[in-house]
Length: 320
Image (cartoon, rainbow, N blue to C red; front, side, top):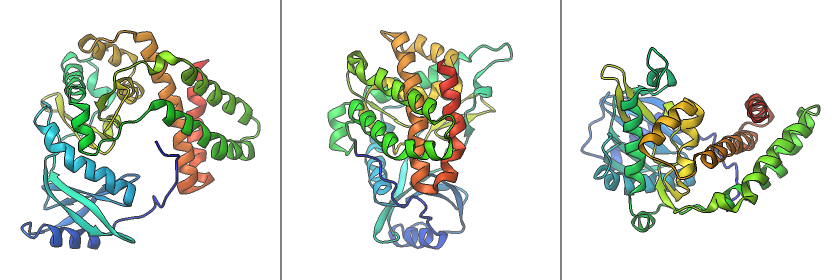
């Protein structure tokens, strides 16, 4: 895993550039209407003809991630039960400096899955929804990792990833905390340091069989819910596919839906050491808060990072 470099994440894909890219690469698709649908750190999403979603990479790193999605989605489509994007169109458009990737797929109808959707009136977790997601993760992780590597999926060493993220925090985040939050900077830095040290120093945290994982099951952003049928409508956003620690797949679900949801998932997908799993998820969560602050500093400057200090503070308070 490379050290974090901010890059120009503020690039926006103009709708005219998206339209031209589709017209040139997909001449069989007559564009009746096109509108901005959403955007992320690396991508801009457009809805076309009220039927298709097109995902456009903003920069080279995101373009490589889209290349990976284009290669892997047809393979995963054969193996997973839940609906996932089916690549129907693909091509290149002229980016800020060079051509970048895009692809289009039929929109999967649904709303972002929230905790309120997975809890019954009596406060218990809906069994069918947890079984759907547990089955999806099991199907993804059963994919042959060597085949995934051939299709461009990287194998990520978590020790290297988090050593790099700790170094980023020390070099970029700590000076910001000391300047802007001087009264609590030492406490926040100590929490970050202790979190990384506990994780990195425990060799058993790295005793796992590498598996293919979605890598970005960011709750409502990646998991779609069908309220009428009360079921998972589909899973999207496969740009984070990687080969690595399967425990890392769960922490975002833990953060969004809670421990009782993870306990329900583990009934379908048992874990050999649940308490270690929970410790790792707490670390992954805290490490991501620090990483997001580093990223915001690079993209938006101090104003952007300030918004995340409260979230890091909550992680620290929850840990004590």
